[in-house]
Image 1 (cartoon, helix red, strand yellow):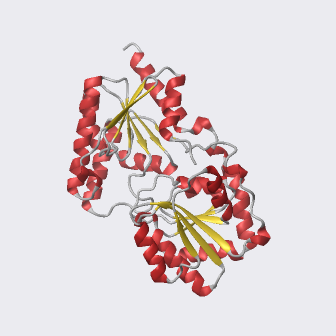
Image 2 (image 1 turned 30 degrees about the vertical axis):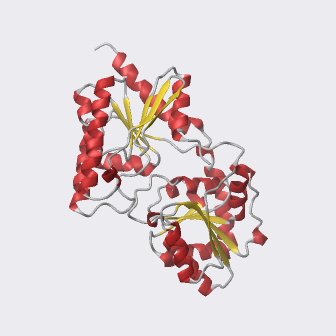
Image 3 (image 1 turned 180 degrees about the horizontal axis):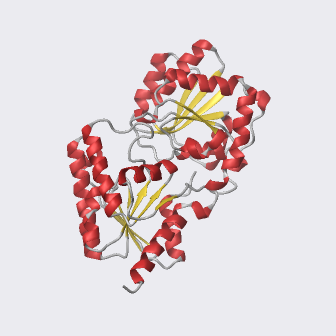
Length: 374
């Protein structure tokens, strides 16, 4: 439902006469010509998608390759998204005089849950070196991304900027407001990947507890795709909540998306505390549809959604149950959250806060700086 980040930046590039060579680490090697731009997939080693030191080393190796590609092409600036490599692996770019902009779609550690193991802390120290001495500019998708960069760097070398996910006007706003008298049963929607890190099994436990306490009072729809869809369906059967929880595939059309969002009284984003959530755009989608959203405290979106978002401790079924009972059974709570959605929607329609504008401004600032006589 959001405007793709890559398209935002390519649109900015077209408007400003900038030529982009975009490289993705998609597992399917491929190339595409898009106007003046060259786009291609250069896969990572399979082990890089795993965990442990082998994955870290594979990530670093991919970063070394990024440095080599940049040295060969000599671009005016290199832009690197989080997840591409370990940040420290890009440090040699400064030795070659090639500025690098870091874009954080994920935090450096799960919000509120800093790394406790020595390996995680060591990698953060290395990242701090990168942001302190190498990154010419940094763009994060939430205040937490920016805050963490400043924390590990102490004094970042370049400016630390924020952007917001952007959405089409006139789409989610077409969803009808909730009629306060019709909130029985209370309908809760999950949109996202079917993976444990996204809290899908917490929803099953939550549905079981609330059904036992208030039979028939809640209904749940889980919509998306992912590697654990069959395990999720089995857990629903095992919990005995198949009559109140449905699992559906990804939204195939605008009409289905609008119907699904309109069905919900609220959405839930229960990300677990071992995932570095950058913002959680599904939380923004819910608010743009005029619905309150319940998020775990690891989801940075709650900080920019104001009173439209209620948070609970990640992984804590009882805490989530308490919040949902407040929304379902306290009309004043639900109405206050619903009304608060209008006040925070503007940032997701303001193209000046989008990645294209913010990142484009950072690029132009670097190019102008390089052009100044020394």
